[in-house]
Length: 135
Length: 135
DNA sequence: CATTAATGATACTATTTTAGTATCATTAAT
DNA sequence: ATTAATGATACTAAAATAGTATCATTAATG
Image 1: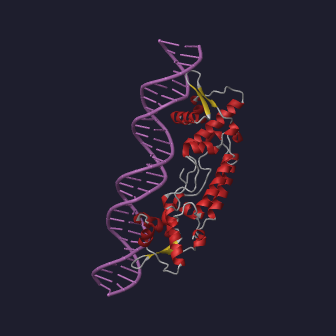
Image 2: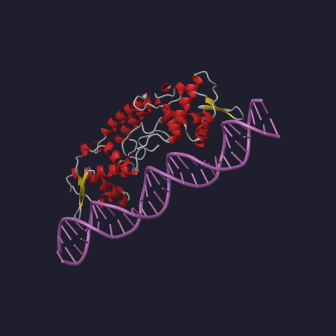
Image 3: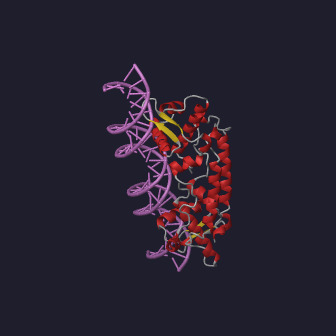
């Protein structure tokens, strides 16, 4: 079962690269070309995912010549769950299990409660995996 | 993000139903028709999933008139992870994240270690959710 | 022993999601 | 004005999911 999609995967790599190169004191604004050249990822795909991060206020974007992307949030404030949520939606284990007749009382269902709890601790753990922690 | 597929979902419901009706002292062999009539699920779909469980030695199957399916493993020995594994594969969070240049040393990668650990505890928790615990 | 009622196996179709491409518009530096 | 970047959006291809159809096999039973 696949848990991480390409968007999430590629984007995490791009973020780690951006964070590490801005840490080195190099310029903060990085173009998509630089990222995909370094990481060997498909350019147009990467463009779209980074644009989405910009809309979500995780990156700043600069149009025009000498433009590109830079981190808006700090590397320690960007976690794996944030990225998963953006590209794959909330991590919700209770999705669609035992609806219907077996478990008519959704609110009271003990299974849902357990799954919810498990999902919460999963979220919590994944939240600790920040870009900064991967440098 | 969807975690549970239809196969897993429907199958868990069927198992709970089978376990509860055999507990009541009713006959142990149940036909697909009885299950889908009770749960309102698509019959041919259900047939395929139950056949698969039979191949995986979770159910016994009986061909011919008066045939059907019965639990081979006991309800307390069938867990949600078992079913997920059969229909959706192993629950492996490390799948495809940060391969390639960012993380060339797969064995040593600290992220993979962390994800592996998180995945293990997730498995452990889901393993506690047995059919018996849902009756 | 023919009939009937069940599963076994497998191939097929439709829908949705994921992965990736193409293109034109907009913007800013020089 | 030119150039080099992102913004937005529409499109295509591949894979996974959901569900159907069908014929073969088997066992009970009148």
